[in-house]
Length: 393
Image (cartoon, rainbow, N blue to C red; front, side, top):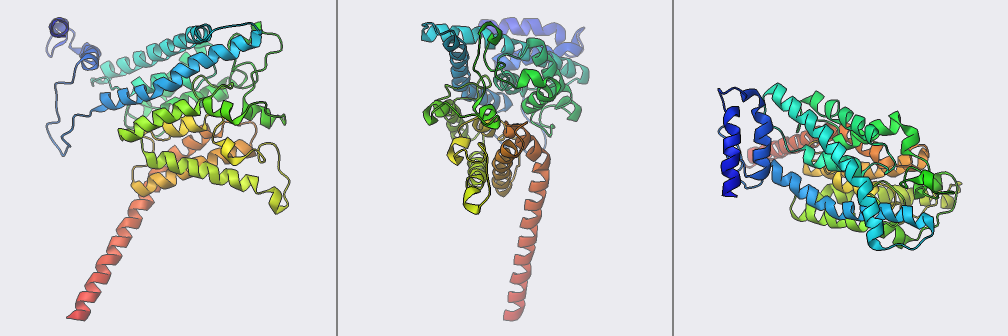
């Protein structure tokens, strides 16, 4: 490592302050901070002494995503090869999926980091590590059949409009990865829904059956998958959002390391369960339901991108609620609205995307009223205390 340190210091010399390429220093410094611990500390203002910095937080989230990503690679290959009705091995499926998904990740990182570097040089600040997570999340929540150029345009929209327009990392009001998916969903709807986009090379297979469970229910058809299939993730869907088991492993790491809020995760699942129970109760109330309302509430928690969205995007510390009570309210409403949108509007069976984006907008309002409530309660406590003192005197 010492040899790398020396070589990197040599490379950085022309980019030092006052030298010829000073303007491009943020690009070189980004490589430095990626390989080594940053050698600068906070010099003014209140701050906390801690070994955890933004880079370590982002890397923790990336590690938490790995189980879902690896399973997604295998499942992508499995969903394709099982259509061929020919024998195949685990590695055949994993290899096929990796060849499809890795280019999506490369495009996402290349385009997104390219924009990040350009803005860092233009604005004269260091490159932020926030895109380490966003760059991986975007391809993981897309259908495997989405063309690479569409992914690139979605990334451009997410970084420029969803983040840089608000000032960059830490200033965005919407989750950038979900912003990319929302753009792709509305800009290229035929590539984001249907029964072929979820299976790679679907055009090569006659009579492909790759509709998601939510799409099947919305169309009024019977679901052919078991609850265990839904939990383990051996079902069609976006690249890495099908396996609740792998997602929960990531959730455990985020909760243990306090990188993601367990309050938001738990309250969101509770909110989704409550909304599911309300819909399941419609027949007992004399109201006629449909396949989506009659779908068991606990299975609603296992299908679609609900679990993935709750664990990895609702817990975004920038666009989510900040107060403790606000996190409970914020998470509950995400789960509640996600199932409501899923059932009421079959055109958007993946309600978690709109549910999270909606609550991203209202998160500051939630925190505002929670803080105001705390202030009023404390003022009332002071008034009561003063009255008691005056009475005692």
